[in-house]
Length: 149
Image 1 (cartoon, rainbow, N blue to C red):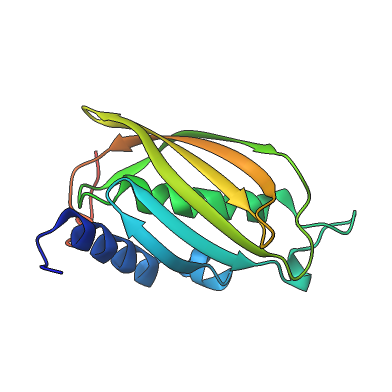
Image 2 (image 1 turned 30 degrees about the vertical axis):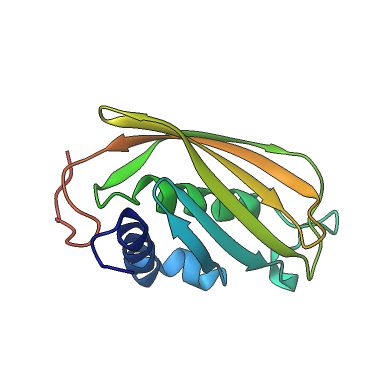
């Protein structure tokens, strides 16, 4: 695939972001796929992610969804940050579950965008629904600047 295609650009942006993302790496989050306005990430629920009720702590689910959102909204090589996010927990995730977060762009105009993320387990069961609003800042994903507005 030529380097200038939107698909190749989105994948390069996602790979660059993950390489700099110590938080996602520390959670064992893996990049499964990326495209223009979309990203698909995976994460296995580990023992250290289990809360007092015996299920995955919601913060880890939020982090997985937030990373998928970030990779999707930065897929055009235009740096973007979260303006706001929310999540609805639908079902519990359990130790050993293989989670997949699929982010998809719903709108993108001017400096803002809206993205939905769906987290499912290895059985295709819905675990959480996330919505994020992005805000485009100055700079490139592939050539990041140190200052943002």
